[in-house]
Length: 139
Image 1 (cartoon, one colour):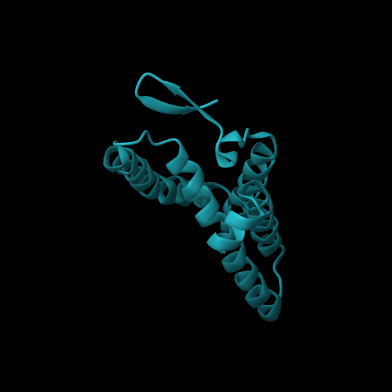
Image 2 (image 1 turned 135 degrees about the horizontal axis):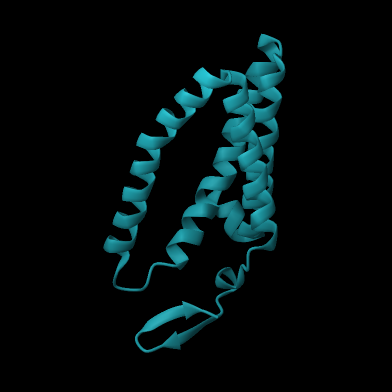
């Protein structure tokens, strides 16, 4: 999917990928049959495959040249902290509400992320940058 997103544009891979991910997660809260659940799992995999390379390219565009190690280290740290806190918060919400509510809320959050990327300025992916001092910045 990475080469396809490079060719067709990363914006719509993010928008459609996050949107489909959110819709399918929310759909799983409606107690579907096992067959439909398996189709949903397949669509979730395709959606994630669409999002991941485009999202990594977006993040890489914001890492200043010469600081890739630091940039990816910070990103991995934030991602790791989210991986620790998220299950705890989800578990508390599942206890208070229900597991279906937590999955539905996650689906809604992914749909909101999709809307965010509709309006996100994707100038970076068109190769437009200006130099400020020694750092290449979006512009």
